[in-house]
Length: 143
Image (cartoon, rainbow, N blue to C red; front, side):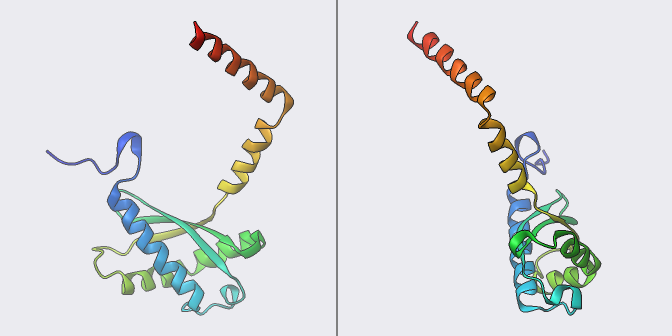
């Protein structure tokens, strides 16, 4: 019987997570050392926050954030422009991979989403509804 490529409910497999983390480390090192020679990347400090690999490990989505969160669009554009060179660097450093993954870069917007959700939870209406729900649950538990 064939093993599934991902965990429960489409969660990434251990292999996807492991390879994604290896690719993340390589990209972080390459960008920190300036191994890709491009003027657009030269003045940027970019954090590689996560690499999400497809189940076949042929493609990786790289979530990045420039230092200070400024110049996000320019950073992603420069990284995508240099994706072939970055792929080559990953290929040189990760010899155990059968295929070097295609890399697509995008800004990690999870922090913005967390901020938006926090803002919603702090609205009076939502706090009132949550408090009422907790009271209902505690009444049910005491019954």
